[in-house]
Image (tube, rainbow, N blue to C red; front, side, top):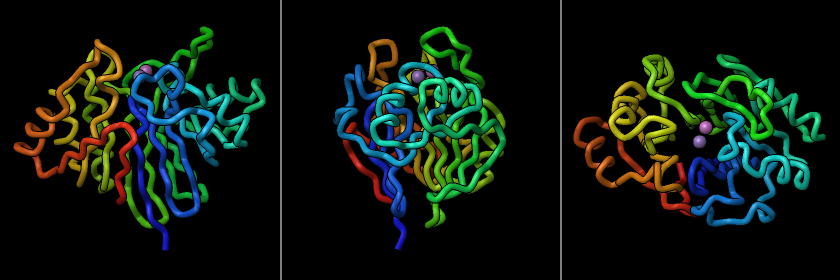
Length: 228
Ligand code: NI
Ligand code: MN
């Protein structure tokens, strides 16, 4: 029987297991003060990268080269990775593709995406993943609030992972408005407390969300796993 779990690796990094597949998302491990693992201990088959910033692309090149994982990201970052001899698969906003672990759709994110060496990194993105056991996960990526989150919510989300850190992304107030548009069964706050400038009180935010919406807030400490 297929089952799905997700482990929070701090900041925006996730380890997803679904069926036989191991999927790493935005693997900023080295230099991430919250990371509960070392990059060299991770052996995924797939790596999802939402955009080019160092706190998301992270250790992707090293991990992909060592493990042979395919990096799934936007077309521009795909081209950049190909020059570095990394297996990669390019998508773009609105497109879906069926992978052995489920159907993945790339969604818009209101943000930027430059790579650390100055290369333009295409459009920033989020992902909607429908797993083989019919769980629907939305990984928002780095984004500000946008009204079309309503359309993403219409897909029927089991889990939404959304940033609450403020400054670079939505802060707690806009993240609450995002939950009202997405109406997921569970929301997991990410992209906070990694650095001083994105410090937030996730528990206070959880109380606010649960008092105003029907969504359950699941705060994952770095290293913690949620089984769906
Ligand atoms: Ni970013
Ligand atoms: Mn970020």
